[in-house]
Length: 395
Ligand SMILES: Cc1ncc(COP(=O)(O)O)c(C=O)c1O
Image (cartoon, rainbow, N blue to C red; front, side, top):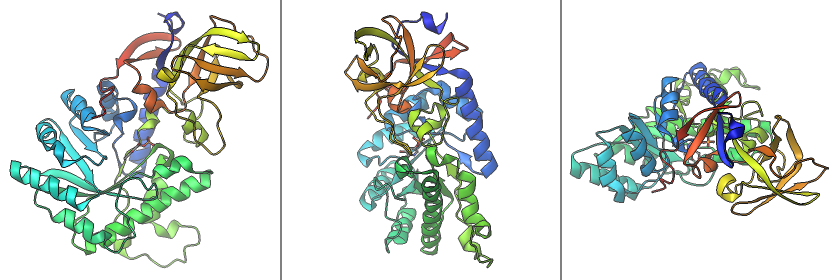
């Protein structure tokens, strides 16, 4: 069946591009010598997680235990939760341990103790990393605090935990104003992690993993590794050999999530082009009440309300693309009601009731969570659908 025969609205994946994005990130990780652990929150699907692992990923991340439960039951054997899960969920974690190699993060001493106690009582050990705040100021310990190394060493010493290392997410990259600022954020992330790892290992913690990552910073992973391992490559480097310990703690793992689909925000941040974006919303014109107004059948319950971020201001709730594939920035999705998109035509448009358009969403990950399934398309033909297995698993 042709994609154009399916009733709208629906989310569609360009299968060729999904596969190319999976391959490209796996190649990028391999070239930098780091492990790839994609964040599954973008697709929430066991099938896509398996494609990522087949392409070389060591496992996946989930944001919530509910997602991990679904993916573990579907056979995903290595899941990391870079989310501050509370020990009140110890029963669920214990139930997961026989099914998958699970790891979590902590950024609080009492929470770490709580996990250690729960695991000790159950005669188990839980893999754990300490979350580090590298500038997003969401979760994570402050790496420049004087007591940060002692906090890490304390977590590493807890009997119910199997301490693995440090983990960061440079979410501030989404607010970068330029390519240069983005690169600087990525290099600073690597520096802060290396510095804290060095200090924490002097305080007695054995650091095996340095896990970093986001889609906007992913293109700098090789630079991040070199920045730590080969400081002599840095511009302005005076030529003195760096001490060996300073080269020890380069990133070992990257965790981009959005890269599998990409979206308008990633285009605006230089992490994608219109030719690599793989998720679109198919929509239909349902009303033309005024010459400069077009109403589409895809509202906030389809597109989600997230704005686009990027180096320049990106007005509207997505990019409208005509049926022939031409993007049309003169059509601005000015407002979303639950089931309507109100599009302002800033130039004359021939769109009529019944015409189809395609929308590049501002933020693909939140669209996924609104969909039961994602239609697979190859060259305009609908070849199947992927179930969003962990849709709504927010607990
Ligand atoms: C802790 C953590 N790691 C990795 C990611 C993946 O980043 P991105 O969505 O930029 O691919 C996220 C995204 O929210 C995250 O919160």
